[in-house]
Image (cartoon, rainbow, N blue to C red; front, side):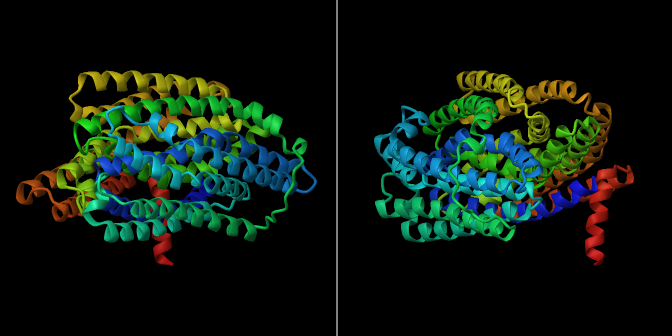
Length: 535
């Protein structure tokens, strides 16, 4: 556990700074674009490069390439250096071709993710922005390959710190956009072509900067790029066989995203401010604790579990997984409960500025409250997938993901049909939550069979103790929320008080109770922090 904790602490520090600057980025984004029509157009346009990246390379990187790099580092005479160079060469060429094709298909891509009710001008704005941001695909992919190589060398810091530069660049771009465009920046009918170019190219510039940081770090880690075109030695056949299931998995999940986006687009057209931007911003905030805590643990776990799987050491895999779940849950349990209580306070503080209004900010918070329910099951689900990936099994997650997506789509369509437009996006968040609860149960049972058990009783006992310790803190936060709202109403100042007093007291109370209950993961975290302070 100590190895995971140290590696996770390094990554969590970078991710924390990244997420804090991401908060600032989100605040400036919504202040400049609003959370209505212009915000929705940008949200969909900027999502498309990431969709295509995940579809064609992101999933393969997370499930196939890291274990393959580890094997080549272990068995090749040169420690896998030639393989890494081939991987970077082929990846760069393929990503460049993909980017060019995607830019040419910008209009059809936007049509996939927008509702028929969108006006021609809104579609035009979204298409123009998409053309400017699609080059991100190449830089996302190159940076991801660099990050994968760094992770296999136990260099975790740079991949977690690089997004900070991206956020800083974007904050500057959005601030400049807000100043130059003014109120017209949130109006699709008034925004100028020059302002769209600034917004789109500036967004891409942030990803370019992020990629450069990773390449510099990779160079410092000893990697020297040399073009290698030996396709036979690149293991593309093996990669294709293993990655084909991952592509199917990503296809299934993207089908769910397609349905979600189209439903949210229609809801946002019916009720201004209750569409894609509200869903996307709430989801981003929901990802904050997951990104800081769970991603760090997951990134540290996969190379180790892959090595254990290669050696047939099931005991180490079980211990690594159980330790990872407990480390993830120890802070995500209280974080999820606090999000359910303080969601609107979070979003009012961040989003009720500039070209956005208070009611739209509160609505984002209502969606965030629903997402709070999903925080723990979503994170455990992601950890479970890495058990399969460590064994080189990319097929089983496809079937689990198919069931997950089916549940999400069915509930999303149901909620869209029965709920008033204002509550549709909240229903989408509820569908997301239900899907991951079901998916976690199924994935746990299948992964336990593969690994000969996952220490389920010990994990369940630990989770129940964590929830027992977290409930009093959530009740304190709820009391602070009620009292502050009764005395001062809800505005950015009172929201800050709610978060500082309610969230702060709630988390401190949780840590105290959990420490007294001798929850070992809390004691490890507290001991690490106090040790750092004493230094």
